[in-house]
Amino acid sequence: MTEEPYRWLEAISNRREYIRDQLKSGTPVFALSRPEGILLIGVGQKQSKVFEIYDRHAFAALGHPVDIERIRQAAIEAAHLEGFNRSPKDVTLRRLISFSLSAMFKNAFEQVFAPPLIVESIFAELGQEPARDSLARLHYDGDHAYEGAGVLIAHRDSQAEREATEWIRKALGPADSLARAASLCLAVWQALVDNKPIAELAVPAELKTQIEGKSVEAALLDRKSAGPVHYRILDLAGFR
Image (cartoon, rainbow, N blue to C red):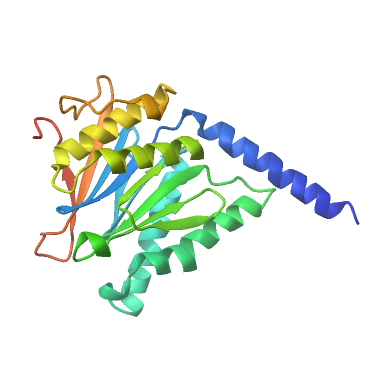
């Protein structure tokens, strides 16, 4: 009996290593709070990485496509249930994360005899102004944190994630266009995928909003939208 807790801890440690190994092929996703709204960027080949959740909410993720879809469906269901029981204005990111999604991730991670959720994700909530936007980083084990500085990246390597986030914050000005913001994200994406030091990354002289051989997904939670739904897909081709 005394060995059981140790076996559980060992199983959890093995599970963590397994998930991290499975995430090695995943590439980063981005969320940036801008004057126009919240910009979300993902790069892939066939599977989507950027999704609408509710009127003012969206998320971006890397990981196993089936698990990402499970999270998308769970987030949509939780948001609509909250909106039905209360009101659409009462659907907040903090309630979605704290009372629903975080617990779902934690339970999946700690149930050592069931498949884990192989997902790293970002959730976004649009405010009336950039200072009132909310960005949340949700990890595969349910751990989460809120970001108030307007830039958030989800990546498989936490140290590289922090360095890349800081680089974008320094390189991106408040008056920069969405095209420049997207270009900086793609420059960071390429550096992370190539395992190049972020500290040595130069700010691109020309805007680059596409990556050859890849599909660049971009969406905006549009702050100027007159209706209740603020999510719209952006076509970055020819974006300036």
